[in-house]
Amino acid sequence: MSRPEATSSQAKPYQIYAIRYATNTKRRRGQNFILEAQPDALLTMDFFSWALVGEDRTIIIDTGMERARAERNGHTFLREPADGLRAIGIDPQAQTQVVLTHAHYDHIGNVDQYPNAEFLMPLAEMQAVVGPDMHHAWMRHAYAGEEIGRLVQYLHAGRLRLHDADHEVAPGVSIHVVGGHTAGQAIVRVLTARGWVVLASDALHYYEEYERGVPFAVAHSVSDMMRAHDRIRDLADSDDHVLPAHDPLLLQKYPAARPDLDGFVLRLDVPPRGIASIQAA
Ligand SMILES: [Zn+2]
Image (cartoon, rainbow, N blue to C red; front, side, top):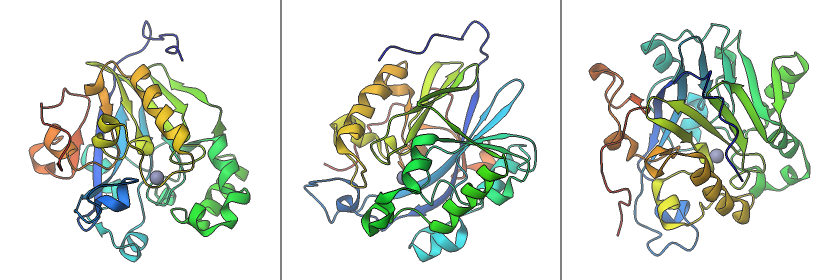
C-alpha cells in the first residue's frame, strides 16, 4: 500500500520517549518464536510504553501493565509507567490523547491514572475482544476481562474513540491497523527530526522477527503478522526507523532521555547506534 499523503508541510517533528516499566529475564526463545531451533535459550523481554512530545501536544502510546498483574504473570515490575512520564515533565492528569495499540494486558493497564485523557483504539480490536474468539482460553490468554470491561465503560462515557484502519491523530502522527499479533493490532507512524519512524508496538516484539522474517508465537493471524512486516517497511524511512515493542536491544541502541533515567526512559527519535540486532546464533 502506498504511503499516506504527506501532511509534512504542516507537520512538526516529534520526540519519542520509551518508558521501560517491566522486564522478564526468564523468557525463553520458544515462548517467542514459532518453530524455534533453540527453544530453551533465554531471551529477555522488556516492557515499554511510549510518549510522543511535539511542539504543541503530547500523545501517550499504551499505558503499560498493572503491578499486581505483572507479578501474577511472572514479570519483574520496575516502575509505574506514569512515573516515567512525570520524570520527563508530562502530567498524566493532563488532557492528553492516549493511543492504545491493542488490548493485551501489558498495553492497557493503569488507564485510571489518566483521568482527563481521550483514549483511541482500533475498532477491529474492540470488536474482537468482545467477540466469539474470547470464548477460547488460548485466544484470550493475554487479555484481562476486567480491563476490557473498563474500556467498554470508557466507550459508554464518551472517553474512548474507536478508529478505522488508518487514522491521523495529528499532523505527523498516524495509526495504522495491521492485525496479525491480535485482530486489531495497530502501529504508529511518527514524524521525527530524522524522518518517519514506525513504532511497531507488538506487530514486532523483537528486531529479530523483522530481520529473519519470522512470526511471533502469540498470533491471531500469522498471515497478517507477516504482511504487517511489509507494511512497516513501507511506512518507515528505513529499517533503522523501525522500533519493536519488547526488545532489550533498544537499551543498547538508544540513549537514556537523561543520564539519571538510564535503563528507565529512552529517547527513540534520535538515530540508533549501530549494534547487530540478532542476539542469539
Ligand atoms: Zn501484545
